[in-house]
Length: 357
Image (cartoon, rainbow, N blue to C red):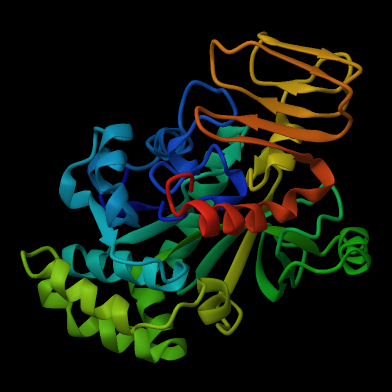
């Protein structure tokens, strides 16, 4: 393990697409939605702990989740949890970590990863991350990881590589195409899913902020001396109140001319919806994905059923449904209609306030 290699885990999202299981008080990254025995953020830490020493992790999250992060990753110290006062998308999140590392170790290399992905083949994944680290160490490169697409999925962004080299310069990014375009991408063979995992030297990403997001560079550079001190919280509060919300993809990766991709196929999923959980789950003879054996189904097919442990349920006559039961909320909706979950949340919030959100 290199003392200059750091892992930044982005863990600030609320995970509304997994409501009612994911709530503002305890969102998706702190849950064991797949029934593995570990939360997403714990699995993410353990995955990268094979490459990065525990003292070189940073977690960027909303300030309300600071204690949850330390509960799920007790190997970290409080100073390793960077607390955002408000969500501003991934570019300010990554800038916060990058400028923190620049002050602590100007020679640092960063791995940036979401907190809530699933990776089945970790051996191949580790090998790819090490290749990316070696490439980024030798070049002024912004590295991203591409996933070989298994289907024309319209829910992912796509990366087009410029040649057939193992590590290729990126030709273009395309955000969430329609089905016809996604089918063309898969048939072409030059396009890969964007996993949202990045590797670069701190010096490279800060130069990219300076060039492509100069307003963010100015804001974070101005508080460099405050980072890691008792003045940090107030300084970050001010910066996040002023900085524009923008993703790292739109803000930098789509503009920079030194972006490279290492593509692979290591059993990746962003586990972004109940539908993706259904696809990943073990199913019974009638293609039902059940959270435990206390669920009795009759004339029910192709459904995902998530219940609290120890609860018995009897379900009859559902086909292609999502059933999620918690202590205080029950949601039953067609799998084809899960894009309406945000509307359900808005309606419940309008009537009942934040209690059930």
